[in-house]
Image (spheres, helix red, strand yellow):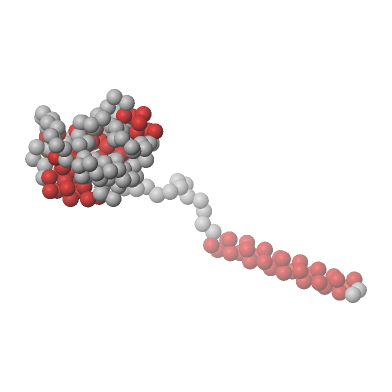
Length: 182
């Protein structure tokens, strides 16, 4: 091949490169979307949780003490069906993915023998028991109540459902713990 033939080959390659780049610039001009001023989307109602008291350790949880005496145990058992995949409710029942819950009310936190609790729950548990208030806070949102817990449950948001669940857990004992006053 002589130099004239090579010039035609390089010219064709150069022309093809210009056409590809030109189409790229043209498509960018037609279909260009600018960067948004504020990335992401705002979620309606998202401020309610974010505006909780900064001094508190988590979201505000409505107390259930006044609802426990009148709570429906059958409803609590129904709410507890969410938990049976990971927890055992039977007396003398063994641990599953989570610890056995029989006799949990007024039991020391992270105290079931043979269960491997997360480090966060062990640290949190020092000197504490599963009181009605502790159960209420934990069942509302476990990961907010005990930061770093390995429990993957989202929580029970309805106060009446939490009260029924706690009343049901209270009934799972040889001698149920006394109801709180108030």
